[in-house]
Length: 111
Length: 113
Image 1 (cartoon, each protein chain N blue to C red):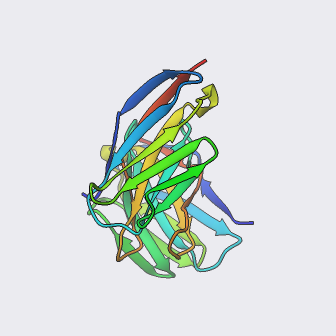
Image 2 (cartoon, rainbow over the protein chains, first blue to last red; image 1 turned 90 degrees about the vertical axis):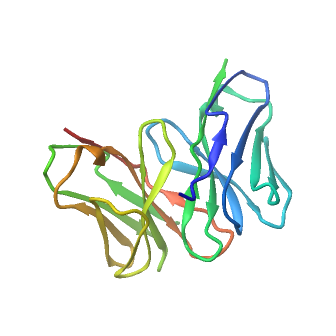
Image 3 (tube, helix red, strand yellow; image 1 turned 120 degrees about the vertical axis):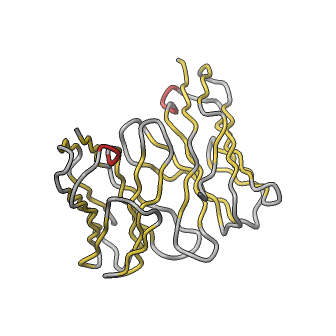
């Protein structure tokens, strides 16, 4: 399977703290994306980082990518209760049209 | 603007019954279309994707099939459902270019009893 893995599987933090989740993948990629999923809903795109980029910011989100280690991290700063959701990384197939998702991190932000 | 519609939201089916889930996209042409399945508390498994009408690629052997009869319509089917087909099914579309994101439907929760 080309599915990646996130860790931790679950994360519980207090509001205002930072949340960091990690993603590892298996094959070469064009880009890596992070998505958010509220319970029982579809996924919503958060941020995309290209394979030639090492770090990217968007609002309270910071993503890093290390292609040599085939890993990425998502940092959410100053977390809010509304950030409670599952977060997934997704990689594209470098020579195809497929997108493969990791196993996800379930984030709970306690008010 | 582009929208994606997926229905029904919830479905309860007996083992051995047929299945048809439909997904349609509006506001774009020639999208790449995807069907994913998500087991409870798990990640997304890519089932099928399509880059054009009648073009279907299957990622895993299974009890399901997919069809794309029109440019913006993607259908997931089964002739006889198994208990293991239960899960949350998500349809998604992509513009087909690099550095573009996937847009997801709201999902169908399928329970096979």
